[in-house]
Length: 599
Ligand SMILES: Cc1ncc(C[n+]2csc(CCOP(=O)(O)OP(=O)(O)O)c2C)c(N)n1
Ligand SMILES: [Mg+2]
View 1 (cartoon, rainbow, N blue to C red):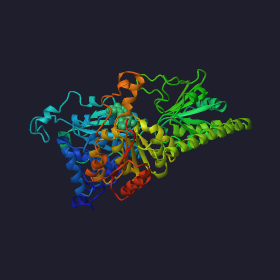
View 2 (cartoon, rainbow, N blue to C red):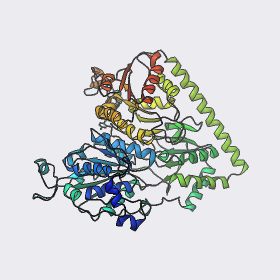
View 3 (cartoon, rainbow, N blue to C red):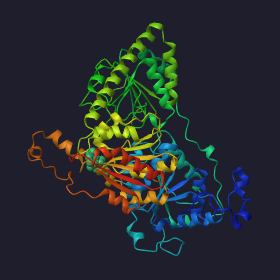
View 4 (tube, protein in one colour):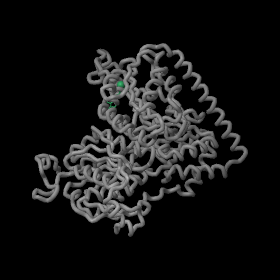
């Protein structure tokens, strides 16, 4: 592993510190890049790249060499995170971005490496993960140009449209065909990836370009190629929305990705508390502290139907129209950096007042506008509603506590009891990575996630994200516990050998808790929903979803140098989680295979 900023400085650096580039920009001195690959690395460093999540191939060789050569010169180089499967690499960069908002680099082999990014490209798109993906491409030349084709793969891997593999999912893509435009294209890639709504970008570069001699590169200062400043919302429309909210009988906020910006969370809380406004909706990051009295969790059809002013905040899918609908007279407003959702062809949610804005900036303006309308009479109504919702929440919490207690000794372990134990063992500041699929509904009724930024969720549908994301999360927050909660199916999708081994290699230990229900519950339920009383239900046959002889996940973890334990006894659950956390805190990845009722 090559370390960031390693080395005390080689002799070559001493002779080359006075470069043209350094003098022209006033930027930190940098040794002269000797070729395209070194220029690329220096440009990445200038963009603040600390990590390259790498799965190498024949066409990334010049980059690998450049990292070592620049490191030998005592230059600052990104740290390489070796990733044995590309989907782990991409999720790792996404997890890091989710906590830092700083795009990192994923380097993959040509077309096939790009294909192995798999569903995590979709997750980076939908989950707004700002990442820069760099892929090799087949060499352009057949002659003796340095880097030209040297093996059969260089013909086989050339495709008519390599970028086309990911074009649907990325915000921007470019080929890097020359060295003299690298200094413009590389910062542009980072700028676009981080710009809101953030997302993945893709670049491909051939060996000839990476090997082409250059005489240094002059990075533009990152401060001169910034993501655009986001909008604060149009004042007249904010005023209008404040009037609606001030006079609402049952206002409801439905946030989606708002908590990606943790500073937005206290703003949403302040607005909700002022108005006595319920906050609920789909799974996502911490949009509002989960134990807040105004947090109603998943929306019920009744709540949606009875709400008269509904505020959609950065939400892809606020409700499922075939299952529930707002009342016909409800006023629906939206605050979103991307109100149109152009990348989703059929969206179909009616909005009376769509406001383009950054919710972290727009919500305080909205609260100020509501404050200006706060007559004593209105304040009384808002407080009354706040007290009523708090009572409702207290009753729900009491009921759930009783249900968990009743399930305390149930075998196989009940989800409610697991939720209760997690609530008591997961530290408040731990980063929880959620890929629980059908178990998540129950678990989130118990698991407390109050601190903004302590819950990562792919917010896309490509399973196999959480394990890789945990590596990135641990790099971003080395002093915190990182805990993956995932289904057994999701665990297998996450390339567990690559991820658990990778965590050992990168020294990013995290705890994985596998919700082992012996298969794909999410793929069984639709058969029952679409065909109630059908052949599958009558014969209790669900091809492809049940695993009668699942792998031993604890042994699998052990084979990757992680700690592994199978947990069947509900009385042992808390102690097992503590054991796993102790291992992680001592530097070893850990896994608990928690056996639930088989589907
Ligand atoms: C890459 C990918 N392949 C397939 C699916 C379809 N799919 C959705 S949920 C699911 C099963 C998930 O199983 P598990 O993680 O064990 O959770 P459970 O459904 O048992 O709660 C599958 C296969 C998907 N979302 N993503
Ligand atoms: Mg399962």
